[in-house]
Image (cartoon, rainbow over all chains, first blue to last red; front, side, top):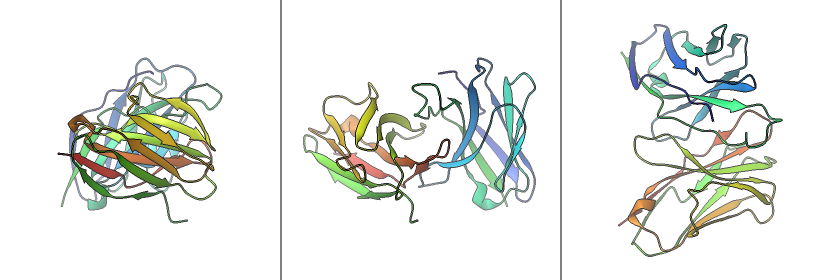
Length: 114
Length: 112
């Protein structure tokens, strides 16, 4: 599996936007970029995914670099409830065998400052 | 839809004992996964079922570990002859449509 690199930790002020970076320089053409987050004492939770174009949903936005070697998860207005570990994961498309599992790294621990 | 349910939430066992965990996936989800998470690390994949068929197993799943999903609904994960290194959070997840995977809250195992 292609690897991702994320900062170990980040801090942000409450009600400010947060930009969580992820580098994936060895990404292949069929790899989707997924983001999950894990709140304290909870299982991981799906946030967003994308292939090439930027994506928005009710939780966040995903900005993907033109060369796809990096991406940024954007939380538009962080709240205390967004404090979690955020994981950037590459996952091959459904048509590829062996893409069922998610390969987590150590993620970025996001702390929100009131 | 009550989410993925795992039981028990916490388990303390003595080294050498057998333990069994249960996972109830979201209704009608045909894909079911088990992961293990140790402190400070991300979850690691253990095994995957599509309906009742176990289609993939990680090398992490030693011969002391066995998972079943007998009728394609709930699943059990059994660890025989537990060791202190088995202490971890065991997470179950389910999925119906790619790519969203829904995780339970996990079972925390402590082997003393």
